[in-house]
Length: 312
Image (cartoon, rainbow, N blue to C red; front, side, top):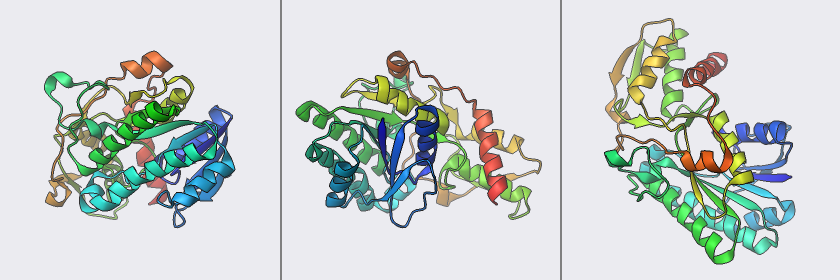
C-alpha cells in the first residue's frame, strides 16, 4: 500500500509517517515546503507548495498513491486572525488543488481531509459532546476555512464519486509540537524555568476555555483506521470525547515540575473570539472503526515535558 502525506513537516506528519511505516507496513511518500525540514529515512520526501497547481498535479501523477492524507494547512487560530488571506489560500485553495489533481490523475486513491473541531464554533450546552450533524457556527477564521474544506470534500465525493473521508480533529498534543500551541507552550515555559532560563512566572491566556485534548499518537491511529473502515463521503469527529479546561491542564503541568511558578495572565495571549467549551462525540468513529484513545493525558504531558527537557 502506497500512502502520500501532503504537509508532513508539521507536528502530525512525523508521527503519521512512523505509524504508517512501523504499524501498517505502508510505503510512504511525504511532502514539505522547500524551506521546511523533514528528516526521516522512513519516507520519500518531496518539496511541494500546494498553491502550485501544476506541481500538485505532477506529484500525484508520479506517485499514484493508494491513500492521500491531506495535512497541509495553516492550523493556528492566532495566525488566522493575523493572516486571514494566507489562511484561506492554504486551507481552501490548497485543498481544491489537491482534489483537482486527483481528478486529473486517472488514479482513485482514498483521500482523508483533515479538518478541525473548531468548525463547530459556539456550542449550546445541550450540544456537548458535539455530534457530526450539529450546525457549524465557526467562531474564527481558521475554523471557517476548515468548514469550507469539509464542504468541498462532500461536494467532490458526491459530484465526482471520489473516495473522500472528512475528519474534524479536536486538539491534539504530544512531543514535538510547536510552542505556538497552548499545552506545548506551557510545558516549554515550565522547563525553561526549571533550567533557570526564565523568571518563575508562567504567562497565560484564557484558562477558562475547555477543550478536547488527545495524544497525537492516538490521533494518527484514528486516521489510518478511517482509511481502512471509514465510509466514503462521511465526516468523523476524532478526539477523546472529554472536555478539559486549560486551567486543569496548567495545574497538571505545574504539578510535574520541581520549581514553584507563579501564573500571570498576558493580555496579548487572549484571542479576539474564544469558544468556551468544545468536546467531541466520537460514537460514530468508534462504531465504524473500533478505534479508542489509549494514551492517558498525564503520560502525554510527561512526554511533552521530557521533549522540552532534551532540546532546551
